Length: 230
Ligand SMILES: C[S@@+](CC[C@H](N)C(=O)[O-])C[C@H]1O[C@@H](n2cnc3c(N)ncnc32)[C@H](O)[C@@H]1O
Image (cartoon, rainbow, N blue to C red; front, side):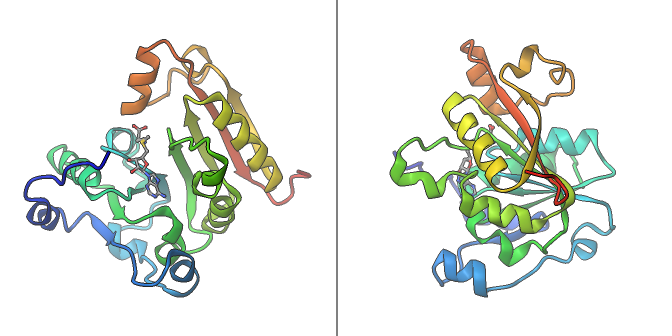
């Protein structure tokens, strides 16, 4: 089902322009764009400081990233979301909460290399990415080889991907893909809310919904560690 366009979307996006670091799909196809188009972000200019940068992909309404940014003011955050309707809410909430250390990219993750410099990101958060179980949609899963090759380039050595999901099948698929791509998998839990990691956990909008239905939450950390034997 197609989501209805938000009322006054464009003027509202315009009011959030100071938070919006990138928007839109380049005219080229996504593969061509990722390889050929470059408008790399200058973090110092964007945030006004040189603090470390973390990235969330598929931020939805932005509840997770704004709470993380509030708890960690000494870190800068980039939040990526393909849907304008949704990212608008995230940006408006961020402005209302007076959060200064988050910027947004209204782009598909496929073209992250156009904007994010290589070896510049400490952590990538993948919260409740759509599992897309159909074999025909494997390439669109945010932990498929296509995306892991991108993340591997953007992450600094020792940087990591932090994944949470409600889907056991997608979780096992992701763990296998992380290992296949030489990431060192750590902190695996198949019941996050009853694990040692529960205390620090920031519950996302989707997570609240799934755990409210009694479903377990899966979480793992995949570290880029070139000296790891794999
Ligand atoms: C299931 S929702 C999860 C939202 C939020 N992370 C949470 O946990 O509440 C997945 C979000 O990822 C976004 N998304 C899916 N594929 C994407 C892509 N390739 N690039 C950027 N965003 C994407 C969707 O638009 C959607 O808002």
